[in-house]
Length: 265
Image (cartoon, rainbow, N blue to C red):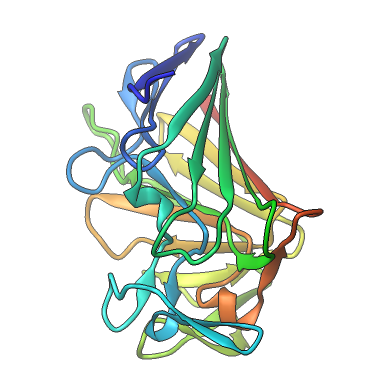
């Protein structure tokens, strides 16, 4: 199948899937209201095979040092799959499946599969990384840009509600220091631990409540810019290829899911 854009509909919800643009979700509309920022930084992109920053772009694979391009100098950020064209595997009622084969600069062969599933009141994103050859460390995550304000007369900015067990202390280089601290008030560009699973509620007062959930225990919250708020469930912390590697093996793929569920207010 071609990698043309896909729009799924369910009830009054619509989601755009853009295989040719890094496998990202381009937009999510509920009752005609766009929830995801549009423009230069838009939608929700997959972070794979790593999430957030890798210190100096380097990680260890056994005794071998691997170097990734420094696309956020002096670090490498957010994986490689968001820069590639994905393929459409299938589109069915309310569901699209897209795939991406890992290529240079990532040094290991592997395949990423993403399933986008829409119902009238939820969007489910599931991603897996599998290999048939060498094992390698990897991470999975999603980076949505939720609109801070949905517009309309008297519209109020979104409120964030979550109760993390800890916050990863952030160094001057924006990377976790390895210390866990009491959660601090925002604004944030920070990683939090939620051992019971990611559970973050975004409320646009009088308009919509949206819950971001995942069985993973790591979430980065980024709200240091004017137009959008990012709530990013992921399988490990930033720099996690070094500090908390999860191995993809021929017998054991890495898989994660996030669900966004909403209700009108």
